[in-house]
Length: 577
Image (tube, rainbow, N blue to C red):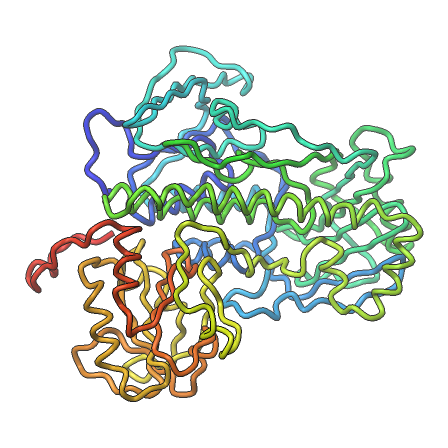
């Protein structure tokens, strides 16, 4: 079901250009929200190579919110530990799965496998990936976007043949990779910074060595000339890559014998053997990010807006944030339930995050590759005292992306700061990921806040309003009055998080928190508070429960005036996303 009634002048509400992992994720997210879309991909067949191959914890949470995470997990290895050696010295292993997420184990697969699974999910949700179609023109106006498409030649995918087609949509999403036609057409192209004197050589093959070949470990080796990684690839293979000084290295794809020789040298294992290679390649690196990720009715996702470095494997994961983030916004706007600030916030949030990530990756890349003897000596000393040196070498202590946030988002509003904040423990603020916590449902079963934050009560783009009693038994009347202030916005779904107050049968969904676990996770003390959480699980608003007019003003700002409150009979038949 489409969340908007399509006008005859439009061929789709949303058109996606690009059917790689991020374009496909965007299609799945739009389908999840019931948005009418079409997706076009220039390639007639997906590429056979694995390329990007991992999904971290936070992107898994987002993929779970649109119902596709488990399908990817079925064809992925689950990583629990990262092992690092610095010039032969073993650094304390990182328990990568020791994070506060329902999905702490990192999924390692292969981009070809990921694309196949996602394409299957698009079809299962009623969509079709229209392959062999290339965008050759874009025009946008006040009401929509006109796209000109050509058919790709069966003999050469870089050439087109036959007649062109013009399609009309309300919004367009560019997911067409780092050489994006959409980005360039918008005037958002950028000059990439090249990483000099550096080459990556890589092989996907079967591995035998004297270290573990279990598919739940990653291995990283920092050696005098560069950085090596040993990672699992779906199907019983491993990937070995070597980012290093290019002095004396031929500028071509390596041979299996060359890769085995350098692997034996770097890992200090003369028994290491590589067989049955499925991919041998080499590459050089450049990076950069567009100044903006949106312009009027056109949005960029993933590589269409950036060129990423391989530090930490963050690129595809960042694109998944984009896909989820643009989809719920468009769903609300197409339904007429949001003001312009909602779409405006996408560029501020995701464009800003990509530029931050670009700097982080460049820092990690330089730490991994451009070191030299002095820096190596310093790192060797640091490795003895810093247990997280392995992740810091890659430019971040949060490989799992759980701290990705939007501190400058126009959707943020915090009314719990100041002295109140100083008197209590640190708390997640607007723009940050809403933390999970164990709570008890009304029927006595154990549950979590996450189970009530995403798709609340079946609203795929619903916002969850967490109403905390502040561990006060007398808070119920105050909380009821606060919830009444926003009941006109039916997609704002209330949850009472109660540590002391006693609810009645007709109150909103109740989550018991007698031990204060959820209150502690949100840094709340003895003051009843309201926390509004967006469809993507980020906090939007915090405020005191005794001033509900602040929350009402926020909802007016983001959603517009509240619709008239329906009676029970009308509410029962209201169509929900």
